Image 1 (cartoon, rainbow, N blue to C red):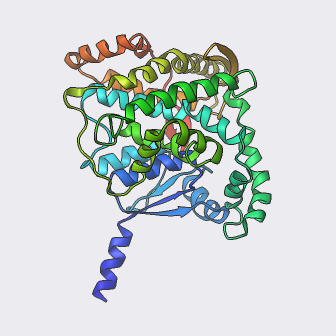
Image 2 (image 1 turned 30 degrees about the horizontal axis):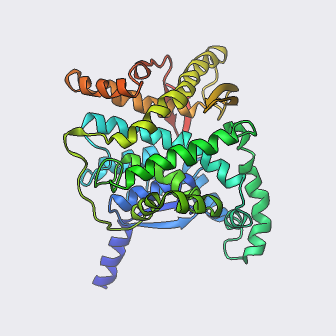
Image 3 (image 1 turned 135 degrees about the horizontal axis):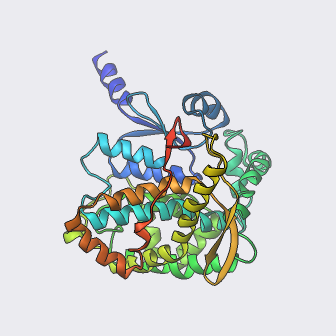
Length: 375
């Protein structure tokens, strides 16, 4: 009886992760739990789980969701990580040194919102079938044969495929997206991981767990993009597998708040291509709020704006959630004290990002009951 009570207490002290192997943001949350060395149980988010757990306890239909030992149900990976970091300060994922902390937050928003583009393109526009339909079919019939899961999953998966053009993934942009991912993202990450175990040295950071969303759940696991990664970037493959390995050996972040120069090309291009999208989102959202002063809960998109990738310019949806994520980055920068900000600004000047970080938010967004509202 004593042993049973002990086992039950240990089990109840575990986090419970509701998600799916093919879910981008589940990949991020799982990497957080693994590399924080926290015991957890993963529960596949079948249709039954969606109805009886996720929607019931969060009011929304998004995964992942983490149930804490305190019986809280937390949705959104940034909030999940914030909560875990606060309650388990040992073995942190977010550095305290100002440059490394800011870069970690920059890489989080870049991974979550911009690497989503190649992740979605390679999944839905490449030869990943029937694999991906079988994966989605598991939501409805997790224990049925693959052929039945693929049949059912095609209808469900096609709903997600419908988001592809909304993200700006169109015939005109596809060559630029593939060139950016294969010849820039993978190239510089491969160079970086050839001499570094993780982004900031020998210890995983917020940036690492964030990159695991697109790079593991989509671009490593899906057959077509997985083949490209294995052929082009074997050190990135080793990093992905290391991030998913419980009790992998961890060292320390680089000394003296150093940022590896192998990350500079990725950060520089983030400021030149992704940051204008964020600035436009802030501007358009402010105008939208003025035109809709009585609306409290924000829709997922509020029209379209122009973006550029490589030498191509196209249209994509304006997503208010981008501003909420951006606020976290700007808050990080604005909370750096004046003395430390000198070295941070020197780095940002090299990245052509100092002016970008001066962006002001006219009307902040908050998350209330897992929904976006104006603050």
